[in-house]
Image (tube, rainbow over all chains, first blue to last red):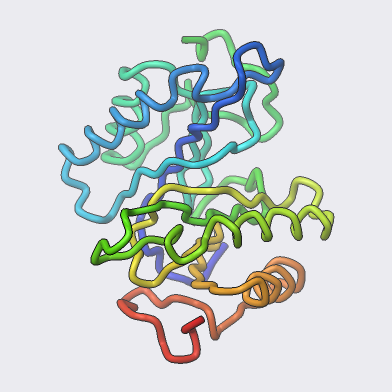
Length: 119
Length: 119
């Protein structure tokens, strides 16, 4: 995929876009992404990733129906997450242990949440 | 780097973080990143990337001294850019032609702009 050593080993982008209430696509912020992003940042600091992992806010990632969404680069793994428990699982399993949280992963063609993904 | 087909072939994150005027690290927004991000989004639409390329805003990417900065994933190529001409060059050379704009690229250890990068 690339010849470059990554500046961050894992660069996490949490969508915090907000649309007006009642918008047909919804939005990640309307589903609580800002508080979950704050929690993720705080927990990441506590885990002491030391510049290897960065948690960022992002504008609309355009997968609003699946939100809140985040994407972890350079791997390109997309997740939906609805609770601090989901955030903890992504931090521990993906970012600490280097595995994946299959339950929360979004597939390429996915257009709606699977039953086990609903918060 | 990854076993996954990317959802976006190129996912561009433009830092639009703003710090108060006079902050010692500066900030990308203080260097005009919001207008340049708007320009990049508009030009990308005109180029008709059709969902293959996405231009996003992002919070602080933590390379403030080199800003405005953007990063293109999954490749993980970082750029500084100071003008609509720089944006045009990144769009055309990197995103249309699949090459790199060496002049504007940030290296892993880079801590200040090279002379040819200053806007």
